[in-house]
Image 1 (cartoon, rainbow, N blue to C red):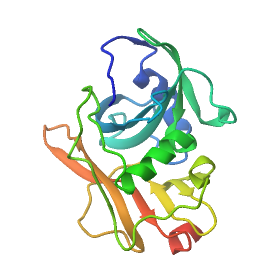
Image 2 (cartoon, one colour; image 1 turned 30 degrees about the vertical axis):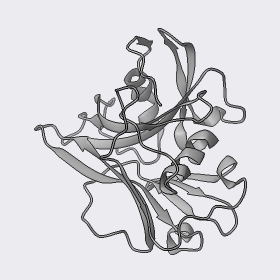
Image 3 (cartoon, helix red, strand yellow; image 1 turned 45 degrees about the horizontal axis):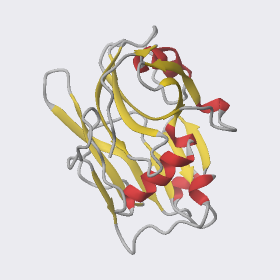
Length: 226
């Protein structure tokens, strides 16, 4: 179960994200630096207990209207080999010491646990409370389940673009579309999809919206070729 330490981080996650977000292809420029606040998300456990996994939602109030961004992140005690381009930054954790924070879709531990969630083998955890499952997070896959080629979670093909981040999991395996700009779900599944991970986030006026953080497609679907 996730252990949430009530301590300091210097710099904070939001301070690290402020310069990082505008460099991403899916960020909608507001003409100035982001004005960020954390408004939702959840965690997954690493079975080895080594890597922190968080799916964070931040609101950006820099533009004429708020925008909500989904930033999956991993927290590590040492650099992840070959992932220099995915490093968001480093921070000093008041309990755990120096931590390397990565954009999660590039981290094989996060990808493996996201697949475990979609396969019903992992339980979503509350974002800010230790040892507490979060039943508001839902993961659904239609059809015969989610088959992934052996080893594909450790080396997915990752593509960042204006529509978000695409993970192609091996030859003939599924594709995961990680939403980066969140929008309330309309109820209907996106065309060609066969599953999703959905969760909520807080609105400025005190309500809550829900949307798809991740959408599952077959590897040969039109989504992959777009």
